[in-house]
Image (cartoon, rainbow, N blue to C red; front, side):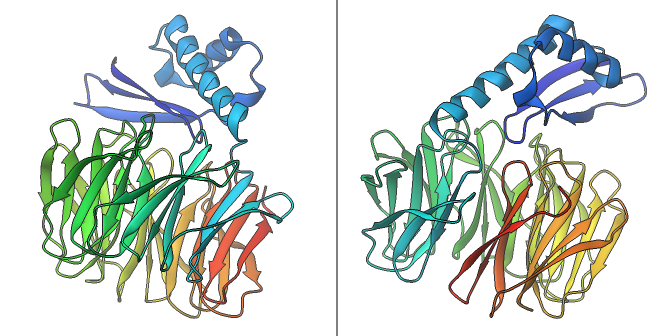
Length: 400
């Protein structure tokens, strides 16, 4: 076995390697390091990892210890600015954005300045000292998390902004718009860096790969684009869906992309070749959301047919079909440790499912209208849900 690449995942923390062996051309394995904050002796933890994880035994101890040190340094950077997961960001049709304390549920900040709906929001994790908002007023804004002051107003789109995302490890962010374009911005200056045009209809999904060198966009034109940000061009146009894209995501290693569509299918694509490697047709109605888990070993799909499917990302075998919601399942999310799946539905509830046995372990009831979004906090101990009843609710994960 020969290790060809070492990859670090900062949040949630983990280490992965790409390797080749006599029996396989190329393989990928990963391990979570969820005890990262508690590590006191890096050398001892590195030796333990080499002993417990055979694929890491091929790394020299000093290389593995150096990787752990980089993870710890990034964790300390986040802690010095904003403890990961202790803040929640919400945007609303009331044109406001609010920052909340996730432990107490109290409102910390309300920022205003947009002239229309605040449709999309994002922190610059893992540091968390800034956040971005995107609005139907065709602008995006960058704000200071502590003071709530506007740092920059980003102008350049000619239609509603429906997605914002910060580029990992770098001072850049992207916006997508109903004007069929994606734009890249300098976070420090607010200056436009590039505008990407390649779709013939509205862009509605946005993702960066782990390195921040690739950007993924999905559109109502039923296609996706993988953009090489270093070359400033489209690397691949992914064609195959027969209806609008609902969402699309990179896996951790940026080797594959999963996309969902209103054509009732999900597709998995090879990033290097741009080819579709598998089409998943197990749903009867529109696929509304897709996602990989943190290591890329599993993926999920949610659908208007009221079900959720969890797949082995290597074999594409459907290992679980979750059936319990009474209406469309609008959103899905993996627990940071990969042990559970969280789902949101138009039936006004969210549910927590255990991947090991497929059992529903918690039903979150309390909203008076459809739940359109759900998420875990950093360590998976808390759950957040957002609803068209104009509220966001915080829940304790009873499985933690």
